[in-house]
Length: 393
Ligand code: G3I
Image (cartoon, rainbow, N blue to C red; front, side, top):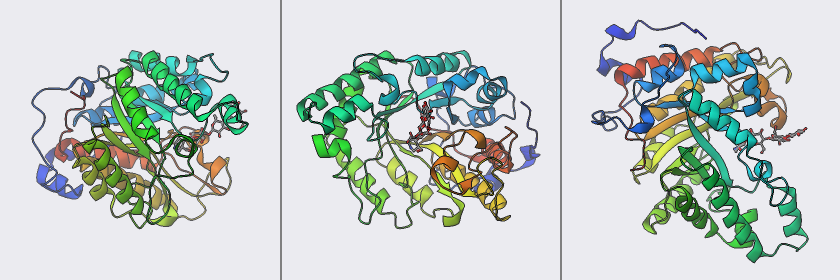
């Protein structure tokens, strides 16, 4: 793929570019002296690809992938050419990996890991502990009482150990725990969450310990949405920040926090995002944007043409602002979009009347959001701080 719309940025001074990106001197720091393993992709693709531009500052650009769609050439080429880290959208979730009790199906995850190895990409594992997309045998057994809480805990332990062991050495970042906090003010760990209600809130820390035991070199992430100011009040970010600080004080092996980054043009861009990412980083954590998309109202779920012309400007603007928030924080080591084409996006199926949420259109042609990200990364190569070491040790 060749998407040329480069700036003649070579003559632009670093200070000017950094200012344009909203990067303060506090965030700036000297590039790492030694090249970390994870920031030296073997195959960066075309020089103006998202992955190649991001590689100049050690940032990984990622996408959620449907592994079995990699057989489709147009889809496969974009994944290979544009991205340096990949996440299976569904294929590492418990519902998929153990559809029948005791019988694993790693085929989707294995397929993606192999593709990533062949294309110089890293893998985000997603997700080990979540209330959603659990196997029916598990939720049914819990509901009818044939699986006790004691057995449930043992099953979860086995699930985490078996899955992390299966992919040991192949996963850069694991989303160990996903979406545990309430959308309320104040926010906190949801007492009604499936896992918390059966096993207590301490099960989240346990999952991190088990994952670390099974693969001590994987970066272990807490992942959630609306945790970088998207809720307007910042209540959820405050709660997650306080919890992370407590977990780290207790020695729980958490290495990073992922803000999913599901935005909607009707709410405007969250004003606190950079500060919130920086606040997590101040705890010594890596940060990442893990599921970026920006939805808006559209004519229908097939064509996905925005109904408000201004949305065609707001959508790429919010993508760009989100990337800039990541660029401004050295500890932000990856920026992942949740699928790259509108035809594959989860949005039309979940938000009635909305769509146009990704960076490629329904025909896999790059949209303004793609070119804005490309332009931001081109500028960043001359002004944004190099990322911190991306390995755990
Ligand atoms: O695989 C079945 C297929 O056999 C069946 O015919 C079809 C009929 O509906 O459903 C298919 O399963 C769907 C699955 O995606 C795979 O496509 C499920 O219905 C659908 O609910 C599921 O949606 C996924 C969603 O998580 C579930 O909550 C999305 O693809 C996935 O992108 C989305 O990802 C989540 C992240 O994991 C966590 N953060 C939020 C994000 C968006 O919801």
